[in-house]
Image 1: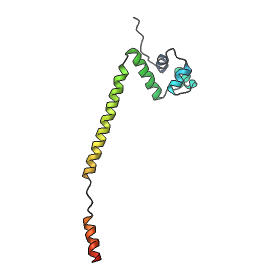
Image 2 (image 1 turned 180 degrees about the horizontal axis):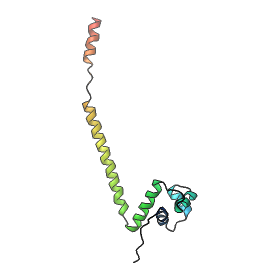
Image 3 (image 1 turned 120 degrees about the vertical axis):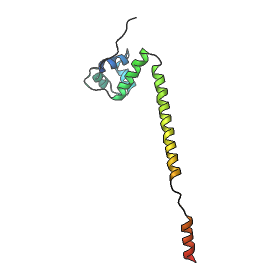
Image 4 (image 1 turned 135 degrees about the horizontal axis):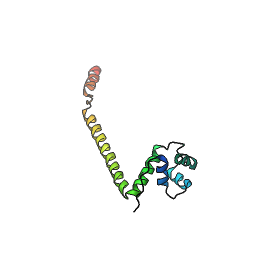
Length: 114
């Protein structure tokens, strides 16, 4: 088995992720213009983070199938934990707020009427 080296430049990363797909098809998949993809591959233009992340996931999936699935699950769990923490903090601050007393203002109104 011949080992393929990992990409070490933007050019190698984008080309490795694109594989045998045409630039047009891969650009459409990434949501960018074909001319932009061409510039990313020639390193005339820096690829945005979402393109680099997509390419990294694609290459990782080829090297180790299923590797990105666990990271997606981990990411979902992290978001769920953050949501629970935020809700718990919000609930605590709601219970700490002072209770408005309307009884005194009601007594003042009834006293002024008398």
